[in-house]
Image (tube, rainbow over all chains, first blue to last red; front, side, top):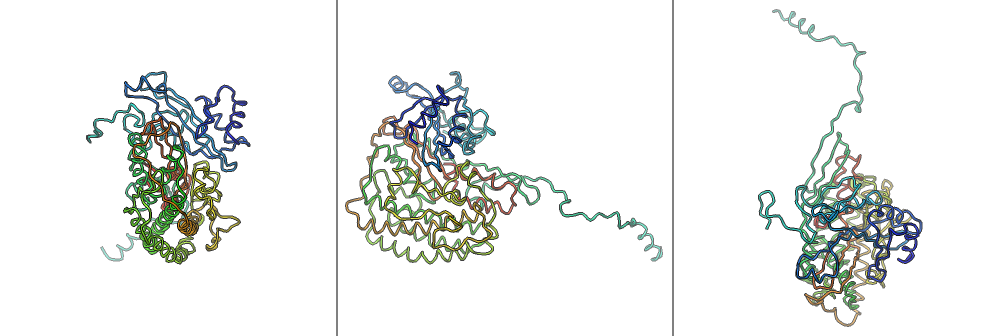
Length: 176
Length: 414
C-alpha cells in the first residue's frame, strides 16, 4: 500500500489527529498528534490492510539552533521531532510517522516533553523509548520501566539535545 | 566408669526414633532461596562488556535483566560534528567484527540522500567485500559459540579461516578490523594485483572446512544436547521485539533485506543468485546436514545453524561477485569530497548486516555536516529479547542463549 492510501485510511478513522506530512520526501511521512500515537500505532499494527508488525526504530531529532547569529535565519522554530520507522513483513511495505513535540513541556526549561508510550504495541519500543529518554530527554507516559539505558543512572542532562552542556566532572573525573 | 556403663549411657542419650515419624521427603520439598547472581560485565561468555543480573531459584533463572552502556561512545553525538565521510571510521567501530558491512550501510544511506549511484564495478566489488565480511563475522559467532559451550577445537578452526579473510582485507585496505574501505561514492582503492586469485584460493580451501564445522558443532551430539530446544523464540515474539537477521530467520521467518529491503539496497544484489537461510518444510537450503530431531524452530540450534547456512550462501555470492567484477568495465568510482554539501532531507536505510538489520539515518539541513545522525543497532534489539528467553531456563543455559543471539556490545552501546 502506498502512503496516500495509508493516509486515507488513517484520516478516515482518526480525523484531525493525523495530518499529511510530506509524501514527496525520500522517506515519505505522516504526522500524528502526540496524544493519539498509541491508538494510531495499534491500528497500524492490527488493521488487516496495514499489518505493520515491526517497529524498526524510534528516533528523536532536536531542532534548536544554539548559535544566536544563525538562529535568526533558521528555517525552523525550536521543537523536537519523534520519528517511528515501521515495516510490515507480511505485506512488505514501510511507513514513517512523525510526532511533533515542544522542546520543553509548557515551555518551562527542565520540564521534559511527554508522549504516550507504544511499548504495549511493539516490545521493541521498550528499549528504544528508554534510549530516546536517556539521550534526547523525552518522557514516555505509561512506559513500564522509564529509566536511562546507555548513560549511568546518575548522569545529568540528555546528550543529544542541541543545548546540552557536558558536565565539568563526573564522580571526581574531569569530563571537560 | 566401666566401659559397659558408658555404652549404656551413650545409647540412652540417642533419642529413640519411630520409623513412622520419618517422612521421606522428595527433592522438590527441599527449600531453595532466591539468589541474585551478577554475570559480567567482565565475563567471557557475555561477548563483551554486557552485565546480566540473574534472579535464580536453585538452578532455575526466574528473571534475567541485561544492563548495557559500558561501551557507549557517543557515536551519534559525534556524527553531528563531523562530515559523513569523517564519520565512516565510527561506523566500523560499532560492529567491529563486520566493519565492512557497517561501512556499506552508512555509505548507502548518504548516497541515497545525495542521489548517487555507484559504478557497476564498485557494486560488484562491494558485494564481494561485504559477503566476505559476513563469512568472517559468522565464523567468530560459530567459534565463540562453541567456546561458550565448552568445545575449544571449532574455535581454533574458525579463527584460522577468519585470519585468511582478515589477511585479504589487509591487502585491500591496510587494516584488519576497522577498514573504512567502503566509502560514500565507491571504495577507497581498487583491488591489488593477484588478489582475486588469492580470494578464490581461500574459497577453495574454506569449502571443506564448513563440513568440518558441521561435524564438530551442528551435528555434534553434545552440542545438539546443549542447544536444541533451549531458548525457544516464537516468530511472533521475535517480530514484536524487532529481532532481525539470523535471530529472526532462526524462528522461521522468511525475511532477508538483501531480497526484501529498500530498493536502493536490494538493487546491489539484483542479478545475484542466493537462497535465504531459513527452514522450509523442515529443510534448510542445501548443501547442509539434516535438522536433528530434537531441534525446535526458534531455538539456539536453529539460530546457530542459520549462520552456518548463510556462510555457504555468502560463498556462492562471493564467487559470483568475482566473476562479475572481472567482467565489469570502468573504474570503482570516486569518493565524494570530504566536505561536500548535503542536500536537505532525511533518509533512513537498513541493510542486512551479519548480526541483523543495521539502520542508519541522516537528517540534513543543507550543510556539509549532518544535523542528526542515528544508528539503529541490530544487536540492541536482539539483546532486548534476552529476558524473555531466559525466563525459566537453567543457569547453565544462559551462556548458550546469549551466545546464540550473537551480539556485539560495540554495536549495542554505540
